[in-house]
Image (tube, rainbow, N blue to C red; front, side, top):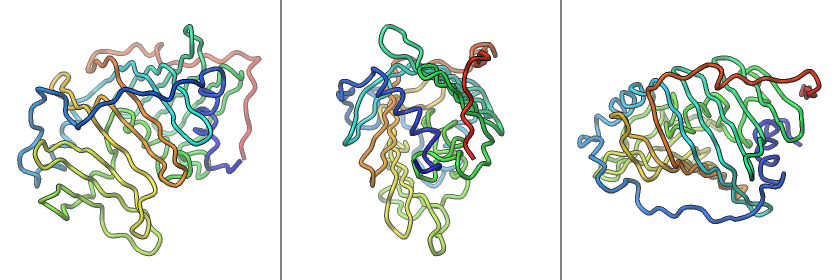
Length: 268
């Protein structure tokens, strides 16, 4: 297996192939904004600044969701608990049928720990590792994952510029040669981010979609987050059922305890 996909391909495969394979049906939601959600921004020129400020109002996040995967070879779903604390602590816990603990992952400022409870092994590493710090052969890293699961496009938002006011299209600085760049599609009427595309040489290879927005404690957040790997025809979707934010989190909730009998995987 290509080392670039080990970390998150393993956790996804273990979650869905370890007794969690099943229904491919997910919640169907049309449109990008829940009924009654106010307009986020009316002047698109102000969107990057407002988008950043909206995220900065979030100091902590707790969400219960259904995580689903769709691909040509497998499909399934698990319950997912998400804890996030500003500025850079993310904890994910996956549960299968009857509350079976499947896996936990913690991403901190510089390092990550992933504990596969079902197969009784764990992996840890530095976020700067060029092989481990990748998400399914894309430019999404574990660092980005800390924000993507919240429906936030990440730090790249600081370098965008508007290229199409009519259709609400923003883009990062034009790339050189084989560099990756990003396109943001914002709903011109609501001012809400709907899609982010990662492109190389004008061709999109990854897409993130944000749907069913709601307002929680004055913060606009999507109820549905989808990551699509276009070449691999794979899609991961997070359907949030319950969300709260800006409430204190007990550090013990995102502490991963690993016994001495657990095998550590050495990935060079």
